Image (cartoon, rainbow over all chains, first blue to last red; front, side):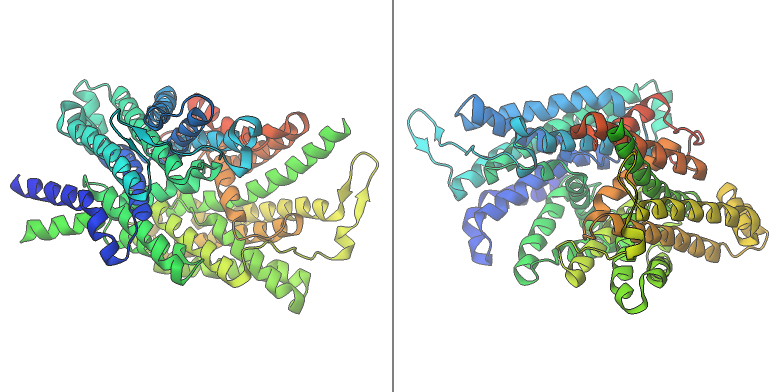
Length: 314
Length: 289
């Protein structure tokens, strides 16, 4: 128990002080924001993947929808950045809520396939609906607006935006943590461990899968909203199945049975993407792919899985 | 009407590609219990190898050399990577492993042949239009249909008539018993994986003549291939052919009436099939759940 407190304290301390130590090791704040955005999406996905045991391969749909929600909201309706984030989050969550009943009955590979199918439908809509979404070129023409606090106005430069993202990351991570410690979270794990037994115990498995799917979509929507603000741009590529695959890679690489696994995975993924592409501009995918293959073959519970095993053995 | 015929025929060609891809994928899923996400990658590799070899050995030998090399690559991958997945009870791990490998293939292809698409030269005899009476049709497109038809018939004949093919079919039904009867199931699975990737390579070479070659051409095709397999029913080879033709035709016909929806229609079909009849048109109940 105390170990968990130390780990959580250390993680939050590192995240809060990133503006101070990250430049020392050659990083920059936009990179840190990217890590948090993807970590949040992957943590949402992991609620399904790691804790409910449902292989979703279409999480990018809700990530991208959150982005489009925020972008369109800022373009047409408001100049409030915070409201736009809320709007994007709700768009992602509602979409997942609506499509939940279609996916909740499927298991295994069929679950992966139907989530992909729904994701691809959104991808092609975003790509073809030129007048509304900007089509293949993506949606631009919106930008994150300064925050107004009444007494002060804060422009969202790289450092301020990092803390803006961290604020929402903390909310998202907090919600997930609370959930996992609640009876609802324990039910998710029970479904993962033995779906049939959970059913015999009178648990309405499908309703819980639906809940897990909707919450994961909500979190992905939040991450997508932040992603749109990070780039001041959103493109259909953010909804493509490859993006869903990237989120799965992050969750599995870091450790899908661990709470912080997706964060570790996102650090590695975004780090490799940034670091390797500055030396081999086109070959970072080989590094990721190779690392991922090694992970799947030799440590399927991810990097945190190994560390935990060591800690238990010691 | 002419437009409908034209688009419908194009859809049929597209569907034939998907069917050929889906056949290979279906073979691998059924016997190896591996969900091969790198199937599109093998297709691209076969196509690019044929493209590279064609100037030296000519179009016709390259048409066979490319797929055979894709098959050899398939054996190597099966021996080194995929084999370690056989013991895992959850097929999801094989999906993840091959997804990682697909990333590597795409990256390597881009590094060797460049990110830009390259045109694939086809013999002049096949490139000329055969008929312009009802709709425009090049000989190559007819050739593609015939080649895919022949490959499909050859595969089914191999599975029905040859001893090895019969063992593959028996293995699909009950691998443990086949193993107990003294068949080397490791060899069986290796060869089966290679046949699957060979078919993917063959589809790639044929597609290269119609489309441009590009490193990312596998990304869209692999998804459509999964759709074909799921619609036809996982575990049914005949279903895969049917599923491929069906979604190709549907995409073609949609192009004639409402072009913007032509890409999305196959996913709508898959979603409907998964909701109404989860095992697919000809699939078995409860497989891979």
